[in-house]
Amino acid sequence: MKPLTDGNQQTGLANKKNRFWSRAFQQRYLYMMSLPFVLWIFIFSYVPVWGWLTAFQNYKPKDSIFNQKWVGLDNFIELFQDERFYIVLRNTLAMSTMGLVVSFTIPVIFALLLNEMRGQFFKRSVQTISYLPHFVSWVVVAGLVSKMLSTDGGAVNQLLIYLNIIDSPIQFMAKGEWFWSIVTLSDLWKEMGWNSIIFLAAMSGIDPELYEASTVDGAGRFRKMWHITLPGIRTTFMVLFILSIGHLVSIGFEKQFLLGNPLVSDYSEVLDLYALKYGIQMSRYSYGTAIGIFNSVVSILLVFIANGIYKRVTKESII
Image 1 (cartoon, rainbow, N blue to C red):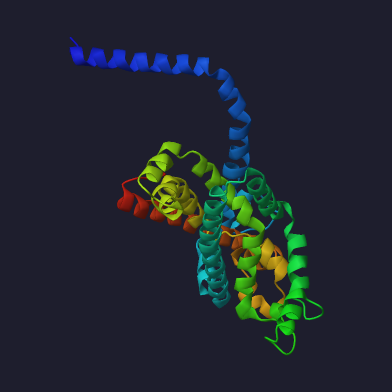
Image 2: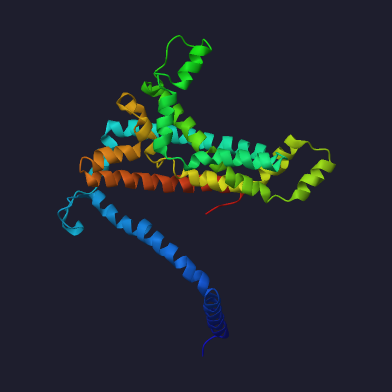
C-alpha cells in the first residue's frame, strides 16, 4: 500500500503540469511570436559554439572538423606566451575601462540635466540632436575626427594656435599615448545621447508624489536629484553597468581600426584586431578561435564577479 503523501505529491505534480499546458495554450500566440527570435538566437549564438572545437585542433578548411589534427591546448599556450598578446590585452582593457567610466557618468549627468528642463520643446530638441550621431557610421565619424585633428587646417590645431596655446600644429593622430583618449572622446560624442535615453525612461517611471513631498519639505533641485532621482534609477544603472562589464574584453574593433595607423599600432590594436590579423588574415583559424574563447570566458567571469559583488553589497541580483 502506497503512503498517502506519495499520492498527494503525484496529484500536485499532475495539477501543475495541467496548469502549465493550460497557460501555454492560452498564451500560444505569444509563444508563436517569440519563436523566430528564439530560433535566431539558437542559430547565430549557440550553433557557432560547435566551432570552438577548432581551437584544440590544427584546423585546415580542406578537411571536415572531425578529420583534423588534435593539438590540445597548444594554441592557448602559444597565445599566453606571445608578448604581443599582453600589449593588445593592455590596450583593450585600458580603452574599455575608460569607455565604461565615461559612457556611464556623462550620460547619467546629461539625463539628469535633461530631466530637470521645464521647456518641453527645447528638451526634446536637445535630446533629438544629442542622439543623432548614434546613427552616423563609424567610417564617417573617423573621417570627421581625423580631419578635425589634422595638421593641415584641422579645427583643433587652428583653435589652439589662435588662442596662442601652441606655436605649431600637433600631430594628434601620430601620438600613441593620446590614442586612447581620442577613441574615448569620439565614442562619447557618438553615443552619449543614445545612452541617456534609457536613463531618461527610468526617470520618467519615478513616482511624482516623491518630488511633491520633497518640495513640501523644502528640498531643492539638487537634493531631489541626489535623494530621489539617482536612487530611483539605481537598479537600471547597475543592470546596464554589470552587463557592460561583461564586454570589457570584447569592445569590437571598428573605432580602433578606422582611427588607428601604423604609428600608433602599439596603442590601437585590441583583441578583436589581434584575432583578425594573426588568426584570419594569416589563415591560423585555430589560433583565432582560441582568442575568441578567451574573450568569451573572461566576459562570462566578469559578469558573474560583478553580479556577485553587487549581490553581496545590496542583497540584490540581476542573474
